[in-house]
Amino acid sequence: MRPDEEDVAYSGDSRWLALFCSARVGFSFIFTSYSAALPLLRSDWSMSAAQAGMVQSAWHLGYLVSLFTVGFLGDRFGAKRTYLWSAVAASASALVFAAFASSFVSGTVLYGLAGLCSGGSYTPGLTLIAERFPPATRGRAMGFYLAAGSLAYALSITVSSRLFPLGGWRLAFAVTCSLPTVGLALSLWALRRTPNIIHRAPPGARDLWRAIPAVLGNKPALLSMLAYTFHCWELLGMWAWLPAYLAAAALATAKGIDQQAAAVGVGVFLSGLTYLTSMLGSLVGGTLSDRWGRTLTMILFSCTSLVFSFTFGWMLGWPLAVLFLVAACYNFAGIADSSIYSTALTELVEPAHIGAAYAVRSVMGFGAGVISPWLFGLVMDMVRGVPLASERLVWGLAWASLGLGALPSPLMSWWLRRQAEATGMARGRR
Picture 1 (tube, one colour):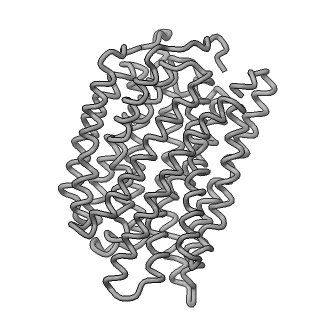
Picture 2 (cartoon, rainbow, N blue to C red; picture 1 turned 90 degrees about the vertical axis):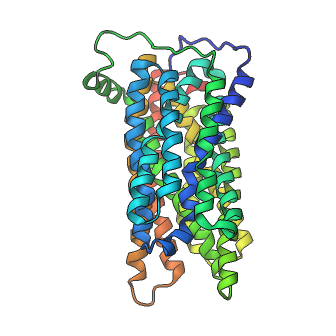
Picture 3 (tube, rainbow, N blue to C red; picture 1 turned 135 degrees about the horizontal axis):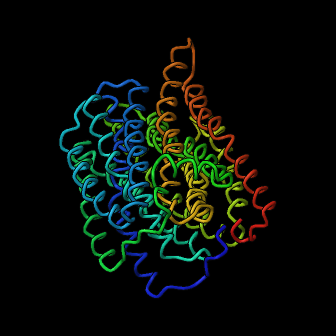
């Protein structure tokens, strides 16, 4: 996948990566601010399950548009410049959401705006890592970057759960949505000596009407993007609803108003802890892909996460400790292949079109992420309308909707592997 690249080492990369990942932690705190507070917001904002899912979908829609835009801006103006300007917008929009979101309508608009401003910390960040690390260690480096995001998700949810008894969701928003400002400061320091690279390209090659057909006409890259799309359906839906599910499981054993409030906090806190295994999944997935090959690792983890999607909802009523362990394994498997899709794409397209490839992939992947949380909630509302429907049936079918949408992912990865074998790609990059 670009065999002309040399597997060379760069001095100081471990220190740079640590600082850059720390910035990623700061930016990612807002990603789970809403889902952490979802059990409380459904009551305070008088939302149905479908409306609650719609607020999360608004974030994904804004994030989708953001990723599409910054991808092309990165190709044209350089990843570093695009990343830093986006970081300023992300910090400001997070503070606005924390201060003024107060209802279903305002929450939808402002969380969507925050998503619209937040994509610059993702794909331009991946491009900066691809420019700095050779293929032999790129999967591991991207795994660390995505793991930093997972660490932030865990911290955001666990911090929120501790703040709910002190000041409710408003205090939790105030704290978690202020951290992108810290990410901005760390980014400025980390990138102070990093060059802003604009890769050479023929005149007009970066124009939308030329770049997009060039990316979509690359069959291996397209297969990788399709696999990522179905993966996003499952992962983003799972992240949106996992805190609410564990809170519901904790509530099932609570008695009385005080105990119920505590149960919500316990469920959300346990959900946050599962993101620690998500962080481990990014590291393990990226490292194994450097050793075993990209596609084999994709297939392994995508099939494993499918098993959890089709079984997790039916476990409602099991001991909370068991559900926590299953959720941790689900989070591990669900994200383990994320860094691999990102790494593989940098090895399947030309350097001048990396941003465009990420942009197209983002529309596909986060487009699926826009729909899946809303559909999850819609399934819940529909099943609850059926006479005598149990809560286990409600949650079981809702989680199964994530599995159904993700079914084609391992098939796309298997097809990509066949393409790699047919074109004689090196095993380590296949």
